[in-house]
Image (cartoon, rainbow, N blue to C red; front, side, top):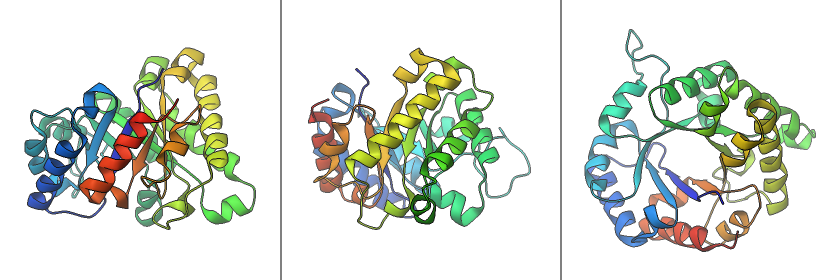
Length: 257
């Protein structure tokens, strides 16, 4: 049985003090669910990482970053290295989010380099894949996701693949309020697990956790968590309020699997 993992991606929201207050509220609201029944991760913006790390001290809620560079240090103005993230207390890093691909030109090759760097520095990458609306309408979902997954995993050993979290985030569902159907989510999650098996073997594929992301709410999380190949959620807007995120964590951890 794979352990559920629910992560909140705050995107470009919350200052340090605001983030610390939200983190305290989340930790209080979910009680002992984090660590006992599910892995719970908060991913604030870089400027709030230090404050949120302090707010989470002593709790089982883990800290994650929203991106990571592939070099330890160097002339990369504006970037943050995996070594820096580890030093601040991060355990996870989101890699390849569609907004990074869409607005900042991140490529499949760059996603692979970030994934490998994160693993090399002891961070767990949350590797995001997903198709745009026009790609879905053209029947290219499988093609796009296959390309993204294979590129992200290139050069990783089976043992390194075991350390990943994969996140299926259909771009057309992010922030729109329109989530994928359970059937669509399972179809793509099943494809991702098949690709993991082809790349790293069945044992590794069986261990990797796959999240669904895209308009996840307290009302629909149980439907996704009941799917055989979905093990959690990457939550956007609903993670910006302690009560809504706590409701997602609570329902997700309690869902029949």
